[in-house]
Structures are given as structure tokens and as C-alpha cells.
Image (cartoon, rainbow, N blue to C red; front, side, top):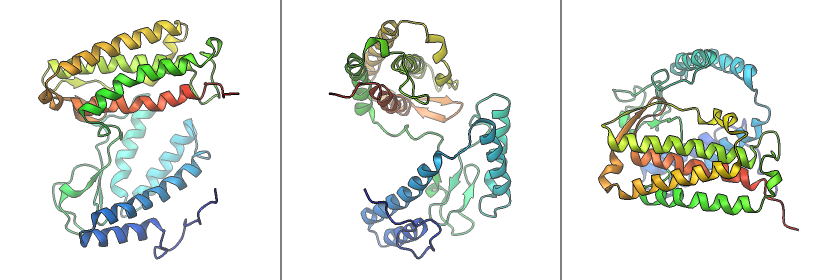
Length: 301
């Protein structure tokens, strides 16, 4: 497939430069043609994300990553537009340096004016000082993007489907390869199943708490760090635990009345979440790991 012409560093007048696309989108929205404007916004996002993906392989890791983020914080502080983000980034890095996960209490969700790009480090109470846009129209940068992926029906369908897909994929992989990583950066099928089991246990706990308590405090869980504890457990046993817990949660959710899906809990990392958002998060999270299992399926002859 031919590579599209590069637009990095192009002036904003270039027809495919992200800023030019967003300017056109704003003008089109002003004329009331929102289904045209969304195409321009998608094109802008795609251009920026593609360039970011191409740079990912060269991005630093571990101590070098934190050092680079400290350098970014200094650059933010010197930028008139982005300066409000500098101190929150430093707070997050300090929490990270102490071995913790930055929580919402440490770093609030920033807001960006959808019209002019004015940025705040938390919820604005007044109109945009540059263009006068109402604060309710600001884009909110949430820490995760899966909270709104599913509604009640599609979330239930996704939760029910995943164990079946997992069994189908696992049946195609030789048993002696269940603990083998296709490459150093990819989990083995066993590690994926252990992670899904661990995440499922968190979902089960949170469903019970949200349904049984009024706006409970939901502790942040680093589920990705639990895998080592299940390394020696038989894969069949881990999968059975996952499926058993999933069936129980599905029964609980299917029996809950529609209004219960609006009940909330307060997540220390992501803020106040409805039951729908919490279930959506877990349902949308699983396909990423199913693709890791798929990577271990031998190619057909």
C-alpha cells in the first residue's frame, strides 16, 4: 500500500494538515453540517495518531521514559498555552517515582476548549477566556476510552461471548504452547487467561458493591501486575475459574432492573462511574487480549 504524502511540518494551509482540517470542521459545524465536520475531525485525528504510532518504536522506556516526561513537564511550563498541564504532570510523576499509580485526586481530568484549544488542568467554572465558549462544551480528557463503548445490551452480549471465543482459540493451540510467548512483548495464552480471570474477579466485586451499596469507593486495582501469581496454576483450572465467575456476574447483571445500571461507584483513578460504564470498560477491554491469544494460533497449512 503506498504511503500517503507526509504532512508533518506542513503549514496549516495544507489541505491535510491536522490544524487545517479542524479549522474547516469548525467552519462546517457553524453552517450546521455536522455529518461533514465529523469526517474532517476523523481525518485530523487519524493523521496525528498515525504519526504517533510511527514514532512509538523509538519512544523511551522505564527510567528513560520518566526522564523524558520530566523534560516534557519543563517544556509545558514554558508554553503559554500548555502551562496549566505542567504541575499536574509533575505530581503524577512524583507519585510514579514513589511506586504508586497516579489517582484522580492527584491528577484531575484536563479540559480543552473544543473551539480554540484553551486548556485547563481541571473542570472550568467560567466560559473560555479566549473565545467565550461555555465550559460544558469543553472536551474532557478521560484516562481511559472504554467507558462509553457499550450500552447495557451490547456489554452483556460481549461479556457472554468472550469465554466462548477464548475456548475456540485455545482449542487451536497445542497444549505445550499454552505457556509460550510468541514474542517477548506478547503474553502467552496462559498469561492472558490468568489476566482475564483476575480482571473478572475485580468486575464481580465491583458489580456487587455498586448494586449493594450507595456510591461505594472503588479502589484502583493494578490487575496487569497480578499475573506472576498464577504462573504455575494449570491453565484449565484458571479458565474454569474465569468462566464460573463470568456466569455468576452475567446472572447478577441480567437480573438487575434497567434503572440499576445508572447506579454509581467512585473509582479512585477514573472518577465516578455508572454500572453501565464499569461493565463497558471490562467488556471492551477483553478483545485486546483475545488478539494476544490469536497470535499463538498456528497458521493453517
